[in-house]
Amino acid sequence: MNLLRLWIALAVLALPLRAGETGLAGGLAAEPFALRFSSANATASEAVVSVKAGTIWKTADGALFVALRSAENVVPARTTAALSVPAAALSTKAAWKPGAPVAPAESAEPRVASLLTYLATRNDVPRETSQLVVLALTENIGFADWQTYAAAAQPAKPAAPGGDVAVALDALTILRAAAPQGRFALASDAALKQRALHDPVLRGQARQLFGLAVPGDAPPGAVAPDLGQLMHTKPGDNCPICQMRAQMQKAADVP
Image 1 (cartoon, rainbow, N blue to C red):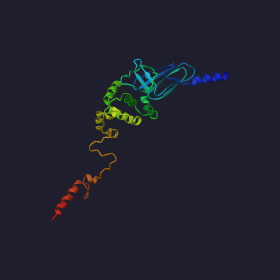
Image 2: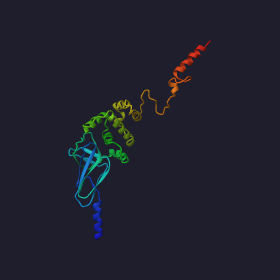
Image 3: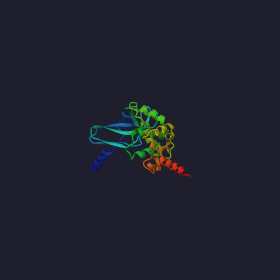
Image 4: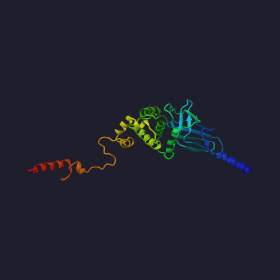
């Protein structure tokens, strides 16, 4: 009987401490698109703090945020540890207020399930891109509205030329993979298409996403023409100059 009691006690100590239980406090991180949790372990044994992907968190004013990845941290005995988890707002009405406390919400958001599956095997997706994908799934946000929201969420971040366009194209690429049947405003946004096609770095990605071609560009898979057909490099080339000479010679040979 004593051995059974000892086994039960050890099993209880080994259970993970889930976010929202006693000893764990959460809030919006100093930088947007993440939640930060801190845990004080006052026991004589280590504890495991875990946050599950897909859990919903709410602030005092009702703003909802979703954890995008699962994470856990081992808290040694009688110490305090912190855990940062990538997250996204579920609405453009949810403002990123650094330090604002969050509490677990008894709800779920099935519309982001496909994104969570996509992110589970990819750890290189930027948090800003993930936030745009979430808003496209929940509100079908357009490019202009995203620019407004991103600027408000990161007022101190300097705007990089073309950075917002790159984020939008990456988000659209993820949407095509995670929700291929969806009809998203980003995919038909004229302003996004125009800026992307005029960017020499992003043009190739934009053409593939939007199925467009720029006048003067060769179609995908086209074979480059022979240099001798474009400019005169040697006698006998099939260039415009050689063709003109051949026509003049034929005209001179006519009796």
